Image (tube, rainbow, N blue to C red; front, side, top):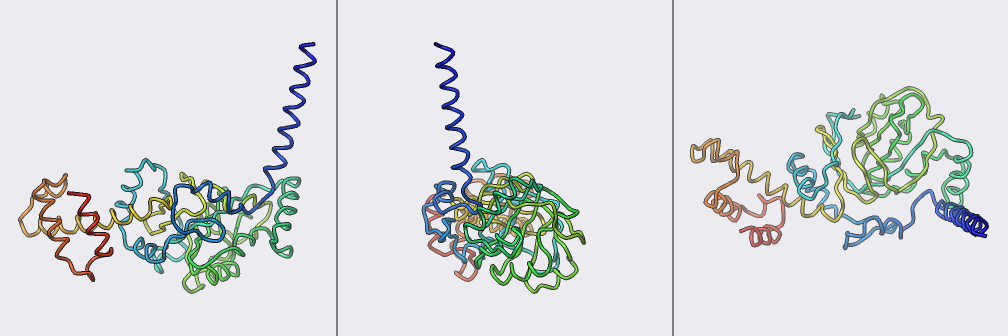
Length: 317
């Protein structure tokens, strides 16, 4: 009797797991509710697909920060794995810093049975039936988006885009890409005005034996876990990925850190502060002097709004 009951319960569990597995894979591009659940700590405006809307003004301010200062802000909040370096920049001498709202895509080695499911589900979502699946994320891009993809580091036949798709990406997003993978025809991609990319390399082969598995789901880019709706900072010195709900605070503190850094150097060169003083925690008197300096800056000299600065000074005596 006990064996029959155990067998029955195991059968029920297997049926439930089977139903759950079928129910879970019903999308290639994640829906709005799923993306909101991933980014629940964001309380502001959202894009139609559910990703947090980070203002263009904040993205522009982010371009001017020092990477080390922003990295310190991430570490302060225990985000210790948000930096990735050792990229090949497609245009290292043009548009040296790129910021934007992340759209993620994940690719895996081709597997026919899973690939058929992906294709069927993707077409049901309305993705183009004439194009390979590596085009589908591009079709979804909007102004201010950065296309970030895990191409599982594949070089030969892992080329996620060529120059035609690079043109399409820039026309839609006015941005570029961050690929844990490769591109094709970099010689022509370099000619796409305004476009830039952070990639592992280039290869003359076309994409093959690669399948898209998700759009706007969590992905891994090197040492970093990236969520849809993150904010990316891509520079010649590496890339950082910020959770949307922290980006305003981290940008402001990075701006303050940069001003503090410059002010300390100025005081050191004037002989007022020693090297040891500027290379360690400020004393209360040094902090007061620095804050007085900030209050005297004109609005044009401030990277942030005067209201933001005043609020910062009130909470950081």
